[in-house]
Image (cartoon, rainbow, N blue to C red; front, side, top):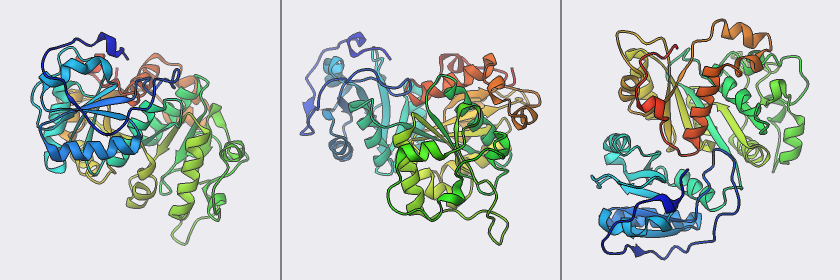
Length: 399
């Protein structure tokens, strides 16, 4: 991302500094998808209630906060801040600002905030107070970019959308860059990522093996105990201990919390194939820093995805469209129908299931269009916004 020194200065009254203290300077380079920023942020809004919500979040994250009532007040200090939080009551743009931008506001403004985010090319939307925990985590990573990891949930907007395939390609593609990556199978009702990763015969722990765990889990021991197909650590269901309904039982929330805490400490990226059940969304979704929703390029699928996103925990959302596009639609029409910005398209790959079943996932991620998609997803996680080539408008999702 560009530095604050590249932001254009304006004129006007200086913004008011809040009581939340700044805490230091950047501490070296972060991981590729974590922005390397300073530790003071700014909120632009005329709403005192919103000022209070943001102040509580910034205090929890131990970052400094500047409060500006208007854009004119804000532009004076742009070179001092790492990110700008734009209130839902602000209509003007941010000419000259090139840093991280988050639209913030109350739940009643949520629909308008997505439109505002698109107009401002904002990176994220945070509905407060629902998204307060995510926003605090995001700001904490600005303060300590080398601490923690990114956990992203991949969710199918409808049945058969291809979420497991995307999760697999994203995990394997990122691991190819020699980052430690964990792929988590969160869908006990699905076909199982053991099969998708051709890992059924590999030794190592699966979810049922962890069901009776108690207390903190050592991150290094977790990482060392998991199967590692295609360079990716895998936590799957395995299918050895089905319940009376034919599916493995979801471990207790306390166990899942400990597993995900250990995963966050042990890996640079955790990709969760969340599944669409209310149970998996509740116990695994809460750990995700953001969600990527896979939507086939059909209006019916977009309508189903629009209903799904209302049930997701408060965190940034992006849509990935799976083609082929029909009836002259483009990817942004699909994103608009869902109500979430489109951040990429799934390329058409012939016999993808057969290739994965044969254990050749690493061959797929070398393809240019798969690498392009993975790069788009990492850019979105880094807070770089919608990729420029997607903003320009792609007419074909299967090319």
